[in-house]
Length: 223
Image (tube, rainbow, N blue to C red; front, side):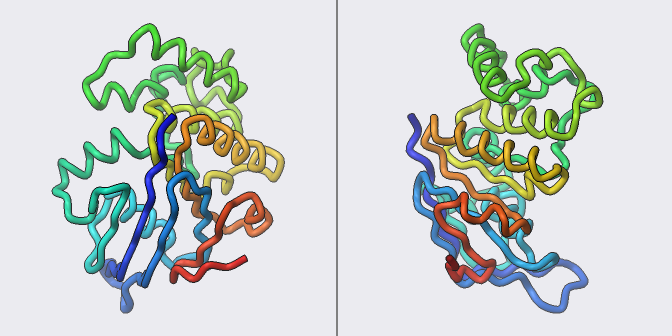
């Protein structure tokens, strides 16, 4: 089992072109193995914060520490390698490759690292797909799946490398209430098997009691 990564964000500022004020996070501390939600009004910078934690963008000011690595201080290639190996990403719009079937989408993180899927990888995918309820859909292309099935496939892909940190940006935003709750429970159940830390950006306050902690963008913890 992995020991999930802790995440510490301090003095984060990031100014987008055309914005008068930068996104600001004074302090955000998430413990290893924790399930945390990030909340805040639309446009406040929740996705920007998640992108900084993932190393997709480098903040204008501040420090982002993931595990023992100051990811905000790494170069682009190092950040990309770290993200590919250590972070699983789940997006609201799924971001599945439409020309690949679901099995191929699941193995994409391995292929991007120049690694061919082994027999044991196929076996693990079959097991995870059964738990995700998509075992009979691995041969299908994303367009042939429902919204809920596509998000389950995206969760499968994000967990393919058993990452210590899982980041999800509005993973239930495109789903109805029942499907959204099922996907969130699936994400938590799968993360528990590997001990992964989970950070979810959400606007749905009805889901907040499912998390260990809830943080506003400013870093103030709420109950």
